Image (tube, rainbow, N blue to C red; front, side, top):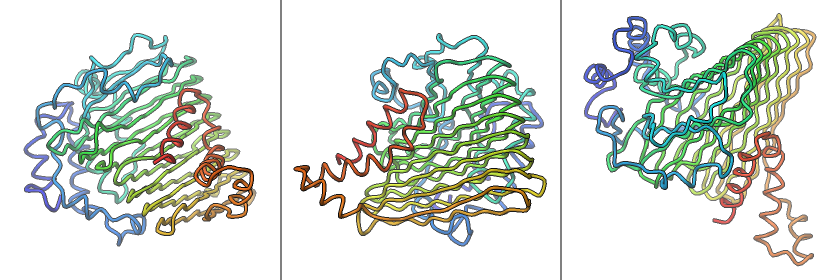
Length: 438
């Protein structure tokens, strides 16, 4: 970073011996190619169209040390993460502290048959050759410096593989904890989620902080969903006030597969989510369900892209934002329908609720269509609470704070109600209530 005593290239040269997958020539080439592209492009800036509303200058003034370059912080124990677990849900649990898998905090004893959940670091060290096609595949080589750095420095993460026809009844909980170490830490995480043919599973990707100390999470998650498989994927952000979070989520779907994304962002100094879904097999369906809750000076940027490559696919995208204080939200949704993707059915909607005069949102839904026989729509709204409805509720003896809470909860409820996993749905309801109580 600009204020760092060393450049990312210098940092890589000094630390590459500590990265997993040593001896894998393809992995070395992958890392160094990414670093070369980063050196050419640098960090994104507001001059880049996709970063027009997100300024990372405050981040670049700070120095973050890669987590794998320092000794692990003070020991985190079970009680430290108890509030971040789903009570009585009995989910298989994998915990990562400052970007490292922690076996002592994890509980994988309840993994169902056919489900493999391992530390990516371990897989790279022991079975790295098996990942060559995956790691070099679905992440696009786009002008996005954070993704390039993620590829160069990826250290650990979750490797999840659901065997053909296997069914995981309970969601898998992947908990990523920023410990609040005195020295600001950067975590470089790469997650691989593979749903093999005919399988069914749900995965919860959950990011939290122990306190409000500065931290940087740079994560990329790749989802490969094979023929007739179904994956429910939850991404939950509730990090501390000093957290910077940059996420890339890349999904590729085969024929007759189904992918449901539930993305809830609440907490963190700056959250940037890039989601790209490619419908590559006929009959594939995806649902992108998103909710962002900003307050104070939080900044939440969601960039989504759905590409219809083949006929008879459908996509649904519903994102909602609630912004208070001086928070700022950004939504940019892009749906592309390729020339061969006849009979595409695509809908996209972004709705925003501003609770203060200083809150702000920029929204840009986009359709790009090259096929003739399609059914597509998009739209967006930005508004405030309805003063007539507020007045009506107050005439029924409900005080103003409670009336506002009722209306905001109702606004967000349809996003929450689409979450099939009851423990996560209840978590989201408690999160909304807690945010509105501040």
